[in-house]
Image (cartoon, rainbow, N blue to C red):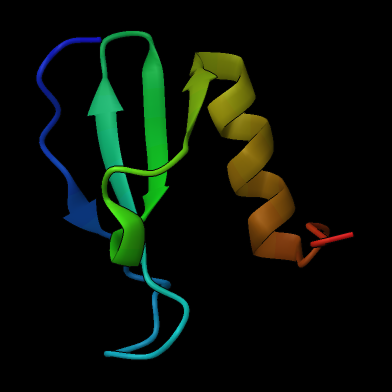
Length: 64
């Protein structure tokens, strides 16, 4: 993966437990937990990123 420029999501809580960072890439986007920068990342293509954002905005995502 190319060198990524991470930024904190505007939806993250200020200093709280829900801190997500996003890096936009040529093919879409990558998401990681800012408290575990070396941990797992979610990577999305363009259409997948649009679907993920739509689900996040409507509250359709679940940890289950």
